[in-house]
Each structure stands twice: as C-alpha cells, then as structure tokens.
Image 1: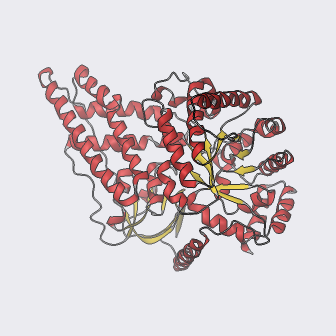
Image 2: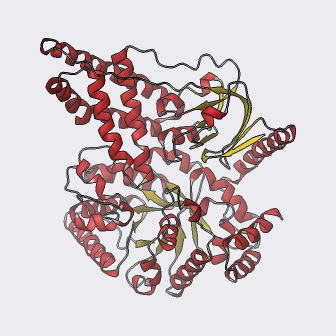
Image 3: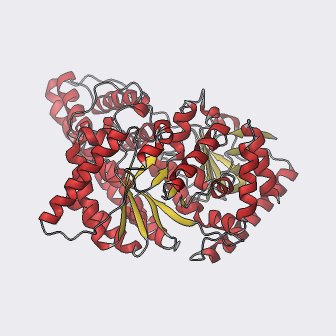
Length: 575
C-alpha cells in the first residue's frame, strides 16, 4: 500500500480502478515559410481562430446545461484570451516578420506569457495560465488537425490519473465514467479545481509524479478531503473508506434539514451565520441556504478579464441584484481587492516592477491611488443601498490615514448622489478588514472611524507569521492554530466589543470545522462561511455549548504550541 499526499482540490471520496491518461506531448517544429506563402499561413491561422470560437460556443452550451450561468463565465475568460492582442496581433506579426509557420509563432507567443505567469506570486493569477494553455491547445489542435484526446476508452467507473487536466477536459469527466481525478500539476484555485468542486467530482492535485507511479487497472482510493491518494490499498483501508463515504452521504442528508434553522448554540447563544459570495452568478446557491445574509461579497470578479474598469451602471446593477435578493438580510460589499498587476489590463498605469505583490499596491492602497475607481464603486454601492441593507468593507487597511481618506471619498459620493436626487439611506455602515497586524495593534484608533470590523484570517495569518502559504518551502509554517494568531484574534474581538461594535470573521478559518469552536468561544459575532461548508458549520454551532467553548478558549490561550491546541480541538471533536 502506497500513500501519497497532494493538494485537496475538490472534497469527497472515490474508490476504484485507475485509468492513466498518457501525457500528450505536442512537438512544434519551426518551419520557414516562403514570402509568397505567408498570406496562406495567415489564413490558416485565422481559420483555426474561427474553429476555436466555435469550440467555445459548444463548450458554453455544455456548461450552461450542466452547471448554470455562473460557470459559463469561464468560457468568457477563454473568449477574451482568444481576442487578446497576444493571440490576434502578436502571432500574426511573428508569421509576417519571421516568416514562420503558425504553430511555431503561436507556441513562441504562449511561452513568453507562460514565463510571465511563472514569476507571479499570487496563486490565483498563476493558476490562470491553465486557461491560456487551454485556449492555446485548442488552437494548436486545429492547426495540426489533431483529434482531441478522448475518454471514450473508459468503459467502467474509474479514477482518472493525468499529468495535468485543463478546464475543458474536466467538463467531460462525468459522462465518461470518471469517479474522481488525480493530477501531478495544478492548485486548488485553478478553474479545473473549481469546476470539479461544482460538478462534485473528488480531486487531488499537485502530486508531482502520480501519473508515473500509478498504472491503469491499479486499485486506488482518492481522498479529496485530506488530499491523499492510496495506491494498492489494503482490504482494511478499503473497508474504512467505504464506511467514511457511507457516513458522509448520511451526514449530507441530515445537513439539508438545517436550511433556515436558527444559528444558535445548544445553550441558546445566537451567532449570525452569513455566507461568502464570489460573484452574482452564485447568488442562487447562496439564497437556497437561507442564511443571515452575505458577510463578504467579493467584487474582484467585476474587474477581471476585461480591457476597462466596470462602469458605475454595471456595478450598481450587480450590487442591486444581490441587495434585493437578500433583503431584509444584510449584504456586506467589499471594495475590490485587486493588485497593481491588473491596472495595465484595465487601461491604467500600474507599478513597473513589484517583486512582492502581496505587500505591494493592492486593495485600498490601489483604490486610493486611483480614487476615481473608488468613488465609482462607492457610488454604485450607495445606489444599491436603496434596495436592501448594504454595508461597505475596505480591504488591506494598514493606517488610520487610509481609512480617513476612504471615508472622505465615501462621504463625497454620498453628497453627490443626494445632489443628483438619488435617495439613499441616512447611514450606510463602513467597516474595515483587519488582515494586517498594524490594524490589529491600532484597532482602538481605527474604531473611532470604522463602524464594524471583519477579520480576514487568510492574510492576517500570512502577515503575522511572515509565511507565504503558496511557497512550498515555508507553506507548512502557515498555521491558523499558532498561539500568536489566537491571541491576536482574542485582542481584536475584545477591543471591538469594548467599543460596542461587532466582529465578523470571513476567512478560511470559518470553514474549518476544527477552528469554528475557537471562533465562537472567542465571542465572534458573525461567521461568514463558504456556501459549501455553511450547513456543516451550522451543525457544529448548534451542537456546541457556549459555556464549553469559552472554557476551551481559556485553555487554548494558556498553550504555547499549536500542536497542543490542535490536540485539544481533536479531543473536543471526538466527544
């Protein structure tokens, strides 16, 4: 029995025989094209572009039918790549000036962009290169007149093992007897992983050499919750995982009964449970949960994959739709937390060289530098506030001056709208994300200006522990249970309550079943949870006693080692 650890990309357990997809190597040779044949080469490339557009139309129909509108945006991303000057101009320019075949010109252009992606620190943006490869692969297949690799050879339910899977490959898995998939490459933020989650296909990625270690026909257990792949499992391991899968299905049925049930501990303590929303298209999945509102509406999606910033009208439509759908519950809209690398794509001048974008021009820093973007977003949010309960949240705040500057622009936007005859509420709360240690330390001062606080645990932990969690050399040091993290959280909650204001937590800790008891015991007022984990977290809350959780936190605060804290939480979980 061989156990290998990877990145859990999509939860769930699959047990079956492996089907190993051979790595598809496409060798592109440079062919010099005589000057008289260059026009024909250009026509051949344009024909491949047209054929790829037709592919995307077909893929969009499939996504709409299988997964709905929210995931059809993936195809829009691919269309934008296909229209990008990198494809439409750079490739044709290479064909003309270098007099080379279209395949070689395309592969050279793609490699330039691949190198740029490799240098990116942000995992989200680095993973977007797979979308570029997906489009490039479609184009090359038409230029080379190659048939797309098919899974029609999978005759029985199997676990797919591959070097890499592109988003378009993922769409065909369920109809081809695939129970789950394992890849050598990839991360949890890739579109492949996101599609797998939506299609409820268990997946483990980033395994380095699984495609060489597994042979077609091998028995494999795939644990998408823990990121484990077990090759040649023992009968005991198979029996154990069959039991886990059976219990998981029974639990899912029981969880459905919690929709709309109050988020109250067993001894009557009320905690608001809200949901995170990443895009308007996911609104249906959020409303079905019947939660207490949206605790974090990430607006970055409006600024991605486009040549210009979204207009006030476009933003107001999106925010209004969400406010109306959630009324009378609150919607917390966070101003876009985008980095400086997005500016040039929006037609604006960005930073020249950012060696460390995590600590660079992003969040409120970027929007204060380009205050027209901030005012436009504030105006759109304020317009939406006339249609439901809306709050505004500022990301990446590190100094009081930033908060004061943002509030001035917020007030200007409000005065302008009133002068234009737009009816808006007297008070729209403006809060801050506490995700930088300076904000946690100076919180007393911030709370003179901020109406509420939302803790972004992901970045707070990174900055507090000086750990880049996508750097494989130090990722193991990213530790939500580090005593310094818990003491910082405790300080934030106590300081905010001292000022008579509320604390929300909206980071990954709210979706971690082990961490949730700590957050409740600390006295957090609102948990904003991912839709997938919402009912499970509510179940934990309803089965807990506030009195016990406070005692748990008191014990944890006396500990100086995260392993001891984890052990304490495991004991609680085992009761």
